[in-house]
Image (cartoon, rainbow, N blue to C red; front, side, top):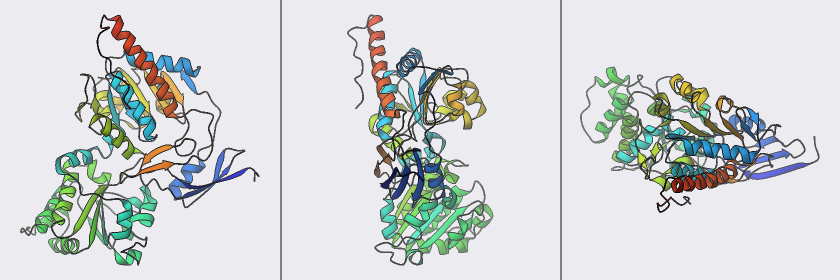
Length: 452
């Protein structure tokens, strides 16, 4: 082992939305590699271990190595010449970088969208329509004696969610950990999370809304027909007992997974769960929250929201922000062939989007930001190689409960951060926009100042 070892305490893991900030990293500075990640789950250990510094160019234009300055110029020219440019991704980078991306999109009158549109976007729509009784994960740890997961599998997607926040940790008002809690899991099949549950409800696929609405009826004292079992797969007796437990707990939590948002019902499902929490507040304290996936997807929603008023799928083509999922969300703009240029940041849509969207990506100039080579960077007209947030780059990331966490990088990278390149790109884009406005005889026209 190298003698040049560094210990980083209270580091943050940015792999998933738990954004655990109690890591203790052992770093081999000679190899520029994290050799041990104390407190990390299996996903976190893999996240830290796989990030080694590999040689390669910081910028490529059409697959050929380029100077960073030339690549920034080419990217700026590409984006400002486009008539319907789109910006997508943002969920695996810092809030500081996300701010720059919003400003760039505003200048070029494009459309900005985050990965929320393909995961918990429906929950965002439900929140706007229904409202949300919310909390921090610290409150869950210290107070929750009833915890329900609906449409998720945290044991595999968020391994420390159970152990750090919701099931086994001992809190101020839950001194005996799991013994002080009732844990319920609702899903269409048994998963690795099922053994944790005291009560498991196996709902029929696509019947989440009907089940939630029946529970709302029972909470409000209405009669529910026994045929609900044939409809949802859950008997009236089980539902009645469950609702009584929920009404009589001291602090209840409803965690929503993508099994609700990416299935039949979508935002109606999420809205039903949020409304159920509201109904239960007539009897006790109940909260509801989506379980978010990417490390800073919650930050992306927050940053885009505080600068535009909307969390994703925002269009600036008229000179002000407009929100319309289905029209301005990236899968749709690509699948319809609307976009004529794309700025992709910390995401790989060419590997996981519908084929029609991928086919269109191949037809338009793409500017890509990523820490490694991906399917998207391979097809990109301009590709930037950047450092990894939380490992090489400091900044801010938001935990899934909207709590901002400061990142403590473990070691330096020879590659610049997303924020550094995006800041330079924003400056050049702004210059080109002003020059274009003046050349068209609009010297007196007002051009937007950079969004701060």
